[in-house]
Amino acid sequence: MTEFVVITGLSGAGRSTAADVLEDRGWFVIDNLPVSLMPKVLELAAQPSSDIERVAFVAGWNSSATELAPMLGGLRASGSRVRILFLDASTDVLIRRYESTRRRHPFSDGEQLGVAIEQERGQLEHLRADADVVVDTSDLNVHQLRDRVGELFSDDEGTSGMQVSVLSFGFKHGIPVDVDMVLDCRFLPNPHWVDELRPLTGTHAAVRDHVLGSDLAQGFLERLDGLLDVLLPAFEAEGKAYLSVAFGCTGGRHRSVAIGEEVARRLRERGIEPRITHRDVGKEG
Image (cartoon, rainbow, N blue to C red):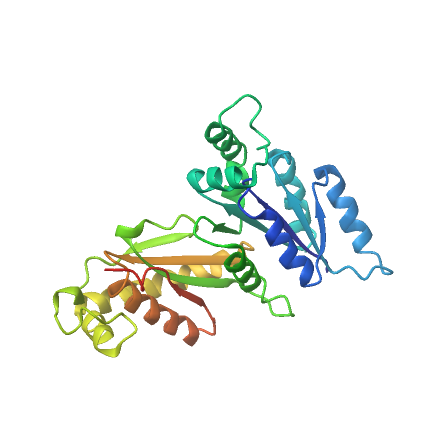
């Protein structure tokens, strides 16, 4: 069965880089193809004489979300594996990228660059909402973005099932915008106020024991287990390819890291190998 991926998102957020990664991995990549022709390409790819197993379409601002939605629904109904990768970035970052390349934004017809970017963001809002995974490239260089896309599609050697990502972060450094669920861990005992624990992080045993040793933490984890018992099979039954869960504390060095590591351990006990990232562990708490 042919696999199908739509790479979409804001102009300047990295669509071309993501497409290059998939092409390097053997995907048949097509850019700016009209939505009406996409099913025809997949029909040709499904022919017995075809050796195309994985197709990626790069869909930009001129791809209508209203046209894409029913087309993708039909593909999923036929049994094809369909995923949408949406690349996002902050307006300030996109402005800097456009100013450095001196390229014209597709919505900049008489408008200031910031206004044009926000107009495109509004046009793509429905596609973002329907995406299987959203990657915010604001803080990623081209090499980090290539690595991130490579990790997202590292299951393409025959494994199946939903990919789960666990992220820890600090609220003082900003809430991540490219995750499905955000859980606040600031109610847990804070190692920052223990002198010998302050220089350490949530990956150290002493910090982990301090955070997880409380009845409050254990009650939280038990209830989270129950929530995941419901969510994981339900999301997978709906065909969701990715699930990202973020845990936040004040600085992103202690409580969120310890909880993230423990949740990842419990996921492994379920037979799920999560991708775990500690976004702010190296920043000043």
